[in-house]
Length: 336
Image 1 (cartoon, rainbow, N blue to C red):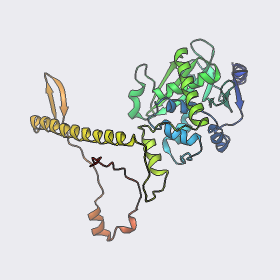
Image 2 (cartoon, rainbow, N blue to C red):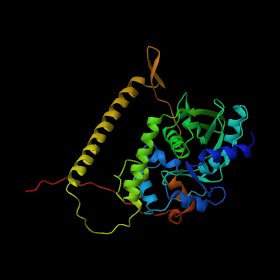
Image 3 (cartoon, rainbow, N blue to C red):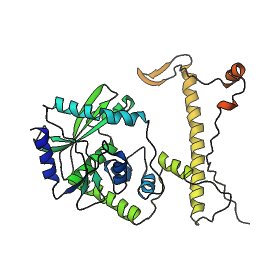
Image 4 (cartoon, helix red, strand yellow):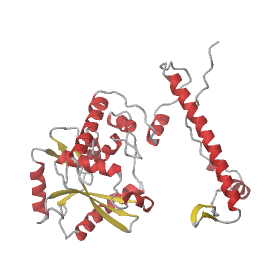
C-alpha cells in the first residue's frame, strides 16, 4: 500500500464520522491555533481529566473563552525539537514494524456528532498486528522521564490524547511511539476500552458545555499553571473586596495546611539529622546489606555577587526588578 492509497482509506474511514478542516500547523500555524480555540484537541484531553502536570483545567478554560492569550512558545527548545523529530519517530515506527507507510493528514479532523471535539493526527498507518487502519502518535521525552515509559506504561496525559483521537475519528487501533533522551525508541499499542472512552467523552463534553459554552468558571485547581495565571492576570489595585462567607473556612483550612507543613518539615529535619549522626563520615548507610540512605558530597555553582561588585563595581545596571503578588492569609480574629 502506498501513501495515496493510505490517504484514501483514511478519508473513507472518516466519512460520516469526522469532517476534514483544511488547517495544518505546518502550513499555517496562526489558522491552526485559531481553529484549536473552537474546540477541544487531543492535548486538551489530559488537561480536562486532570492528568496534565503542565496545565490545569482552569487555565484551559481561560484560554478557550478568550480571557487570556496562549503563551508565545517561539524559542521553546523542547517543543521545537519535538516538532522536528516527529517525522523521525514516525519513520522509526515504520522501520521497526515491517515498513507500513505513514500518512500525515494535512487537516484537522472534527467530530460530526460533537463539533467541539477535534484532533490533529500525527500520522495514520496500517496496524502491524491486525492490518487495519491505525492512528499513530509521535512523541519525544527527556531521558529524565524514561520511567514514565517503562514496561507497559504510557504517560496518562498521552493515553488520554489517544482516547480522544479514537473518539473523534472512530478508529480504534492506536499506536504511540516515543524517542526518549534522543537515544531510545519505544512503541506501544493503546488498548481502547469502550467504557473508558465513554467516560473521556462525557468529561470533555461537561467541560465544554458547562464551562466554555455555559461560562461557569471551573474551580481553581492545584496546578502551577493555575497559580501563574491567577497571579499575573490582574493588575493589583489598592482596596478591599467583600468575599463570600465560605472564605473564612477556606482561609482556616489554608492556615491549617501551613501549620501541618511546618510540623512535617521540622520532623523531616529531625529524622534526617538522626540518619546523618548515625552515618558519620560514611557516605552510605545500610541495614543487613540493604541501603537505607546515602549522604554524599554535591557541588553547586552560585553567582558570587560580592566578587562581581569587587571586580566590576556597581551591579545595579545588571539587576532587574520584577513585580509579583504574594498571597498572605490572615489569622481569623474572634469577634468580641
